[in-house]
Amino acid sequence: MEGRRPRLTRGDWLLPAVLAVVGVGEVFTVDDLPRLPGLVAVLLPCALLVGRRPLPLVFATPAVGVVMLSSHLGLPDDALTTPLLVVFAGCFALGRHERVAARGALVLVALNTAFHLLGAWRVPLFGDVLWAGGLSFLPWFFGRLVLAHARQSEQLAEQGRRLVEEQRQVAERAVADERRRIARELHDVIAHAVSVMVVQAGAARELVGSDDVAADAALDEVQRAGRGALTETGRLLGLLRAEEDCEVTPQPSVDDVARLVEDFRGSGLDVSLAMRGSTAGLPAALELSVFRIVEEGLTNALKHAPGARVHIDVRRENDAVEVAITSDGGGPRVAPSGGHGLVGMRERVAMFGGSLSTGPTDTGGYLVDARLPVGETP
Image (cartoon, rainbow, N blue to C red):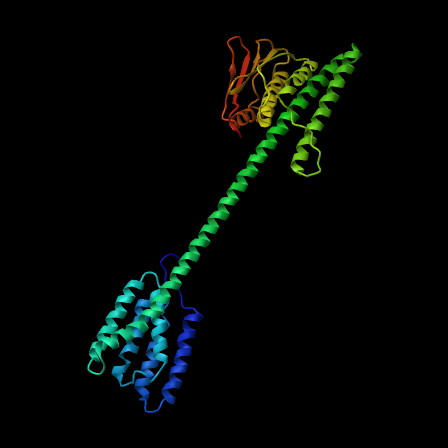
């Protein structure tokens, strides 16, 4: 819970306990040492030292003060080493605690000066203060170094966590983008093939018995569309496997638009094509997008307006490729289905920073107009 003091741990008790045991042993082994003042000078600061980590200013400072006062309790300055270790531990705790380090340093200086002013009649004041101040400052400064190292380690750990999180988010975005790309490709391939197969299968049903030759031609078209879908699906699966020795068929390009138009003509769609300007040097991704946009437009026409006349205009300008798919007023309205098809068109155009407009025409038909800048890269 935020703001709560940390609880005492085994480590908080261990050091004072060890120092207390050693100090008591010193009190009973040093000759001519008053027992009661010696035990007080050892056990009291050790007891206070237990709370040095959670409340260093409250516990560590009095522990150091008791040690400094020990000379006024009748103990020689060099009689015991345990109080000196208590000073080291207390000053280290004050330096290591972030919020009380500065105040702790001021308190140490004040204690050191005050107690040695009281005993100035015994030793030279300046030398005594300097000596005791050095003993207090060194462990305090070492505590500050440990605190700085801990801060740096925490910052590095936090930076590492942020980096891992950013990498995870980038990976998730990449996976999501790849899923959308695969969904677009599958929709473009499957929707086109299934539309052709449905239309031709329906035509074959109507022609069986009355015109077997035409029925066979329609069934051949169904077979061709199915094989084409299998080929394209195999290409996508090859890309997903990403094996070095996997042979992947080339992606469709602008040059394949004419073949695509012929396929739809064979499916019974009245479609014309006009291609203006050179398409040489176009990025492969842009050529694929042009092909898929034309394919989606023709698929929508075949599904929703099989009796309409459709005109495809692919025009290369200096800095862009424009694709216009126009249907006349004959037959039902040629509008995108609103599902993956229109979304896929917009995503393909957006990859290149282009624009897409769709809507009915004044003559009752439908227009899909896409502009893909050549200079942009996805």
